[in-house]
Image 1 (cartoon, helix red, strand yellow):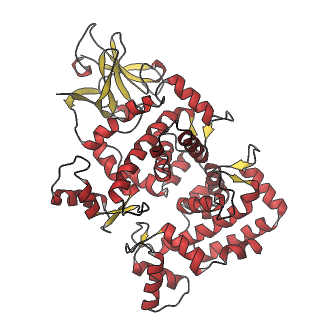
Image 2 (image 1 turned 180 degrees about the vertical axis):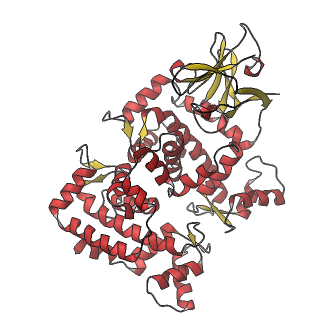
Length: 491
């Protein structure tokens, strides 16, 4: 029976090597090799001489985190070595670590664990494993050589590779790309808004992983229109057999209940991803899912790494309508003044290339306008600005000519999100009818129950009984206050 290797006990520097390593589909140096279950670049392999190593990449001594000596010509696995393991400490000195243990355990046949094990061989097919190939792709992505890339640059690379036939079409799904980006910067990286060179391998691995999950989720939740992004219990139960998971109807519904934590009867892609993470890496930090679902806890990471005073105040102060009214005057003054607009643009476009990315915009909001630091609103404003429908030219960048409309979008969608969040009592990012009616009252719109229910059904176009933020934005911009943006720009 194939064995897995469990590494435990490491504390401090490189504590992330604590994981269960499952057997890979390929050999290395004529010996078996293992890969960490948690989706991160971490491999356990034989050096070809007299060591078993844990490293970020195969045969990369510069990125080795731990090793154990083994008897020459030994045919055993790392668990048979007497030890101790040697690790690099905080002072960058290599020392034996008596607390680190290595144990052989049965390999896991879970369908999603097996899916994780296919990633490395599949990435190798597309030239995304060898160091030389990664360097070439990084140079292509980081074309200005500043060693950081934005979400928009990553998206542009994916679109071009798929369009050119280098990557398959299934790798170009925006929800999966956003999940990959967030996981890379928030968990695998250093917590800032950029993907740096040392995070690139993790980014590619995450792109493959979340696109695989998105394909599975989309096939399970498909309602025939190709647009459904929510899965109910019946769809989940029906799909279990297709996934090779032999569960009874009752067992399948129990699994669905684990995903549907708010008992709303439907789950989104982010909830599906959180459920799979718990299956694949059950010992991982459960708080991580909340961070990458909403972005609301990103400020903790930003404060830790950047220490922005604006971010600190954003997460302490309560907001009210007066705050938005006061800021609206400031935004109007900036939009109406060519001098102020040019000054703010220069601050945003610090490298002077006349285009700015989503991450650069996010950084400006955190530092200059903490009231507008809501990630869902940022994404809506960004998408609306670059879209042709919103007056943009349809590419992945915000250009100088689009900047005025970007500021208006940022203010407008953040105010909408604040209203949405005020009435979202259970903070599940979904409004039921009673929460929606409360929203109408908050906005000073008097309606009877019958009228409010009619409006609710206008928003809830698929009849799911809940309203997502995107649907809420569409309703407010098209039905409730279509002149809002025009007034803000014209004034």
